Length: 52
Image (cartoon, rainbow, N blue to C red; front, side, top):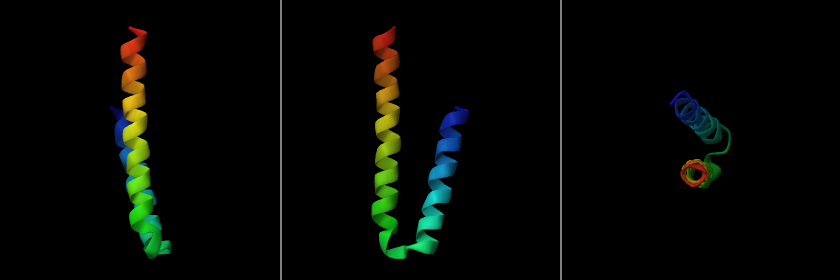
């Protein structure tokens, strides 16, 4: 659970930095970052399900 919290903190901080530094790239960056977070969570879930 701590890993999920830290992942969201990193996502939030990176999104803020992107908005401040490159406003025109903020939406694609945030969407891509969220997609990678979701994909990695699904991958981990499938991996642990298959491993059992």
